[in-house]
Image (tube, rainbow over all chains, first blue to last red):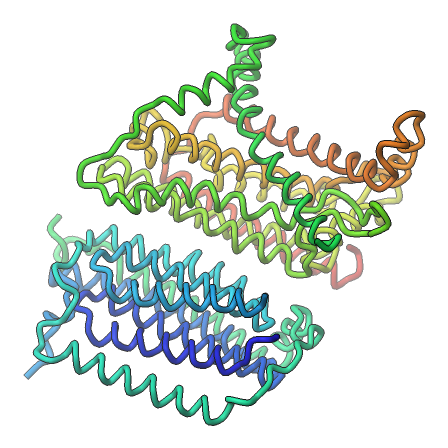
Length: 101
Length: 173
Length: 363
């Protein structure tokens, strides 16, 4: 018996929610970043599930590009973390308050 | 059989996703994310795209997360005392919002696809050859743009992260 | 148990047995061969030719103390050698050691996973072994381990690019990621009508890049600064002793063996002997008096193919040892410069050249 596509979609929804919770709640910048990667992964899973459901390769193409963009984003984001650490000596997101009221 | 494998992979993915969010040590969080991504690659394989499964392991776990580990070690990110922000009510607020979001999307999916059967896998349409053909014909322009994007990202990352020279604000020499 | 499941299990058993046995054989070879190169004898006390030295080494590993460094993250500390050992065991699944054979009325290919995405899976699973080094370096709570771990993993991911590009170029003539097709292509074609179209003749530059990248991937001299005894105590496995250290050793030898088998498959014709048909050799062996009732043609062909592949693999492993005891070590910045500024452009040039030749129909 084949696994219904619905289960893949539900799993992706759960993963996304867990990632969103982490991104909103964690203090450490790295942990926020990891949660964002988790959300990206959940979106990729949804795309591949739809690609299978509709028999269309477009979903897989989008995931390919999403992976490449995620790589670029991770590189630049981590470089930013290094830069911030040099200036502020911390990557605690609660302390990034230069533009606060 | 396929059901058992799905339950195994999905359970692993969910369990380690929760660990990613709740570990206090950033290295442990990263390793949990590795497990999640490998489990997701397995799910990609089950959904009929071995190309993406291999790419996920090769790129995401083999390169991006290694970069994460490097930066964690470079910045000597410590184990946190608690994982929650000190803003009042943020933890519960975030938990409730995430739960509402998850519930809403799951309800939508359920309504739309509860009875949709999984179509049989068209091995020819999803084969590497077909994917490659499509990548280099229909999606040629985005492909080239991605190459340019990665070049820009590499240059930008190396520039931002380089050691500051004399006189620039930066770390103590 | 269906025949195909049984066949897969048998193939996996054969490969795992081979890979586990690489370590004792290499432990012995690594002592005796350099000894002769250096005009001395090497260990020759234990057993004939010192062959039981490996048993002595294993016993030594088992009886050593299990170190528990203070302040080390125990979970990651225990996880690192496991990842190092298991990750190098995942990649044998796509290497073939024979053509499609018929045993007991069923025909199946002599590779565990006969997939058209084989090489991609190989590269993906091979990239997981970085984590063993990084986690070992980090979790030991030791400056030298941390530095060794970061250096080792940076070295590995830098040379992975050159490795992947040279492998991709080696796949272009065959037009498939399936290693069985690659070997069949090398057998079926000849260059100038006389030499077999082995990868090493078609793309010598690619082979050179692959070889250097393979040395760097396995942290072998001349690229072993991360674990150099005189530089960083013992690098990322400073704090490991006994069986955990043995796991790292075995992981390193296993990935050497797998990369050697891959080099044989991509560049030296894999399980084939040039201008000789393996199946007819198998048939000849099965036709020998007394042998024919034990094994049929299929099994004999499998044995011949496996032996040929192992001979080539061990030739490469001997080459690994030979290079180790010949060259001095690269300094770390020289190593990184070589990987990024020399090997990567060479691999790209090779790839473009082979692709151009393929489009022109010459390859």
